[in-house]
Length: 262
View 1 (cartoon, one colour):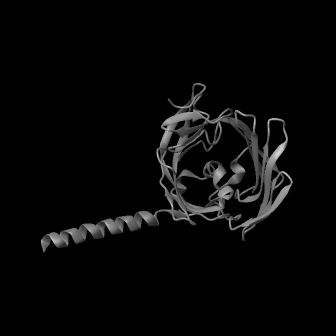
View 2 (cartoon, one colour; view 1 turned 180 degrees about the horizontal axis):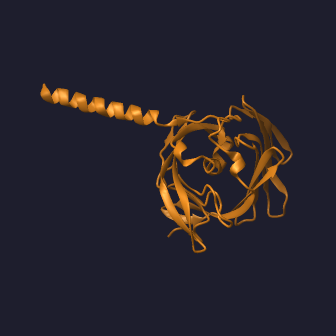
View 3 (tube, helix red, strand yellow; view 1 turned 180 degrees about the vertical axis):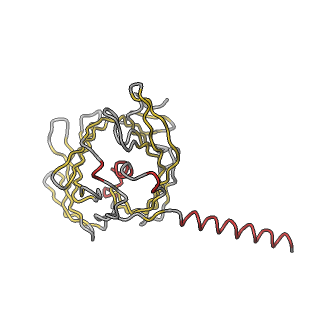
């Protein structure tokens, strides 16, 4: 009887602790002021990309990203070129303050510069509409991904504008290429001092957990899990990006490494 009461007490303490921990997560919504997009200055950097294949890291080619202000909006462009000469370019226009995604454009070109495929989408609070192009074929696009969800492919930049005491935060995000929407939780996992040309620079380590709304799949947080970890510098000196590195168990994009891990 005593053992039964003891077990019940332990379970109650664990339940209360879990509830308190869950309540500590701040609910972040688009435009509530937690994200401060105006803190981002224009930049252009190139990252090393690596993917893990059969327990080995393989060079996936460089990725160049540029960010500029255009009136009351900001524009972020990501460009990659594969070893066969096929290049892809993705451009997203954001609301200046909240970094809400407003328009997205993608284009894939062959080694000769000829366009192989492309897509354009306009987002609002209800969803998105647009068209995709492959050769002479044009297809109408629409979906539930909307401007109240932060763009998953540029999430590190969003998180780099958040004040550290605001963590952990929970928010809506999306991967529009897969028509996927997510409940996402970002947690401050620690800090790391980076050496930039002999000068110490503090980076925040932010782990991200993704809950796929459509499938129910969960991608756990951390650099050795599928959710991943961001290295963030909230006020970077010249020559270092806001997001020097992002890593999961199978993908790595970094300005901190010259080569893929052994």
